[in-house]
Image (cartoon, rainbow, N blue to C red; front, side):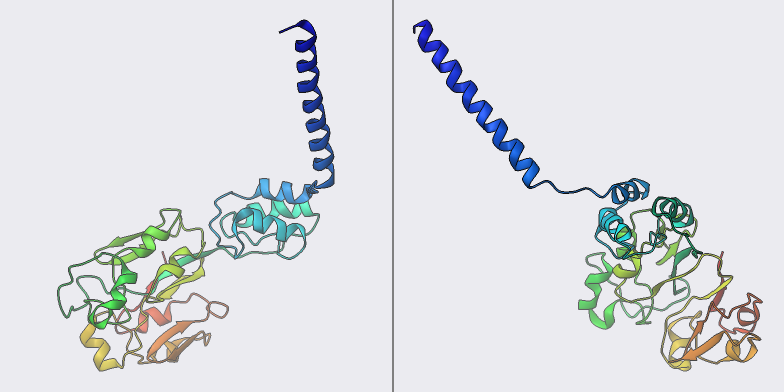
Length: 266
């Protein structure tokens, strides 16, 4: 190949490269996505777990919502008050008060307290037991099945099955709500971290039936309600509920409960 041919080839390649570069530069300017600096700063302040506990699609979704004013600065349950204050500074607003929440399993029906109707051999996944007789081997149809669907769902290793019942480590729990969503029996709820007492039963069976199924079952006797000085306990469908906005933490409900279905939240 002659020198002239080489020069022409180089020129052609260079020209094509120049054209492509100019084209890409113009396209980048035309289709440029404006980045919200506050959104980027908020995203950097978030913990990055992408657990979805805030109700948004990951940390980036929450950051965008906060930057647009569509979500409170202390929305992230994982980051808690510290992250809320940091984001408040970025947004130039007051953080406001936030209450730390933790998951709580409303069941004490372990292998020692509850009865079983049959021996179950199969897939160890609570969600699969909706297809077996009575929704599981335990006599109580409202109790923890103990196969750990909640354990698998927790991204913080804050819940474990002990003697057939799931237990939450309140110090490790970030209140993301994944275990709440995973439980097919709907017996995991979020309560205040500072709550002194909690009802550890979800049974809605009448007293005589509940007593046969579990030695720790709430029987709806209403002694907790009658003895609460703050009127913080209600009983519906044979099951007690504590209103934590009213609860004074006196412990009268736990002391009067004949079934010990109200426990200290420690």
